[in-house]
Image (cartoon, rainbow, N blue to C red):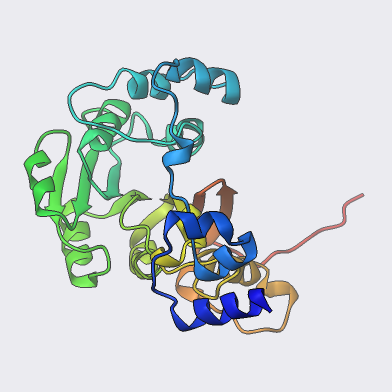
Length: 274
């Protein structure tokens, strides 16, 4: 009876903030229904410990990108430790080339600085952010343009200025609607052989970012649609996201990161040879 009353209350007041004492008393299934999340503060690394050693020991990674991350100066860069080897896995092939790289979300400017050092001076690097304060970073490690990631007109102007795009990293609002709108518009603009990475997708499980566990709005639902589309040859159902799946060569899922690689896609065929 007490649980039923609590459920009724939560259903009637979905936007009410729970006080910490209430959070401690409610069972997890009710907290989940209410969309409670505890943010990322509990995952913060102890500042007394060695960041470089943590990444080397846990992930067996000691590449140059790790050095650039741990030795970053001036502008602040904030990254989850397990992202560093993932970046290397998918971005290394773009080094030494005059690539066109777009980062969605400039924040404190440190990420663009890290990418400049990683990709080199020949790379065309742009960052976009909705916060006007980020304009202060324009011309430092890359070009910064102020606008919203869910504005196709703004996005088109940036891509045109870049002369196209080969690599996209979405580290923007992390809101489900924004992620999907941006992907739908930018993926078709991506060059063949390019990669589209979306990070911080733990927000897909948070209601205040438009997500939720197994919610229809959870971005991983889009990924599941793409998986079905990739296997359209083997079922009779309608292709759900052709603007992406028609040129989706592969999908890679990591903790809080999805990478969608673009290339020409051909109907499968097989041979028997003796």
